[in-house]
Image (cartoon, rainbow, N blue to C red; front, top):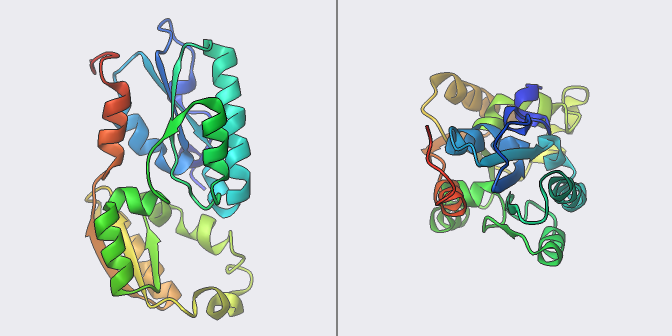
Amino acid sequence: MDRRDSSSVLASDVPSEVAPRVVVIGCGALARELLALTRGIAAVKVHCVDARLHMQPSRIAGAVAERIAKTRRQYGDDVRIFVAYADCGTGGALDVVLEREGVQRIGGAHCYEFYAGPEVYAALQEEEVGTFYLTDFLARQFESLVLAGLGLDRHPELLPEYFGNYRRLVYLAQTDDPDLTARARAAADRLGLAFERRATGYGQLTPAIRSVTSGVGEPS
């Protein structure tokens, strides 16, 4: 796995002379996008939680709570914290933590919804409920996170058990990258699914981050 995408320590975690006014705590699967959206704003820091918790959503709420506590110890209680996670399979457990801590998160059930937008995502589901989704991150990390994470690299005979009810793979593309499109198409072939690509860009992540960072400094 590309550690730049999954590590809980990013370049923006490195101490600087400028104390942050806003800290964005996000899933490591959003690391590239979050860094791109906050690049050059010295008063904003991005701290990410290990993206591999995608495969263990019951641990997400606890990991985010630990990050919030660490952030407040490091920067004080006055720093504004925003969580760049949707519910992401926590079954509401993340919202319980955030309500207790007085912290907001991006809306939505998962990144597929806030990348595509709720109306487009709902339409995709209505069109074909048996849809498996990839983002740029998941296209990049398909073999290590999906295949190895599910044990399909060792036990390919389990493929029908995991994906027998799926009919298509939809790649929600944040960037126009031919290599990632090729990887996503190869993933669909590997799973025996029809392939579709939808260009979403950063979707609702962009206005969410711009809203929380507004007025704290301009990119240099």
